[in-house]
Length: 94
Image (cartoon, rainbow, N blue to C red; front, side, top):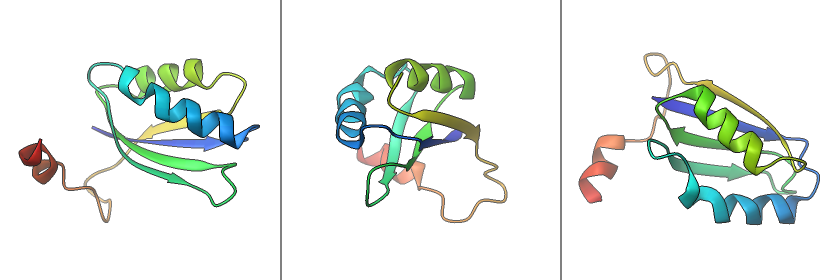
């Protein structure tokens, strides 16, 4: 499933985005970040993940960004979404 992670109230943008880079490889086994969209000032961001569980991703992000941001994760309604990442093409490249 595709999951959106919205990051708001980022208290220290430099620390948050550095932490984000360092924990991507430590994400739960069935998760993979597909896209990262930080705002110009770094105080908010939206990421697209492939994940097996919204709750598992939410818990992981909350733990890793404790004190740095507020996170909100939700499953994408892929049937009505526009502009989804082409996961089949990416899988073929890996």
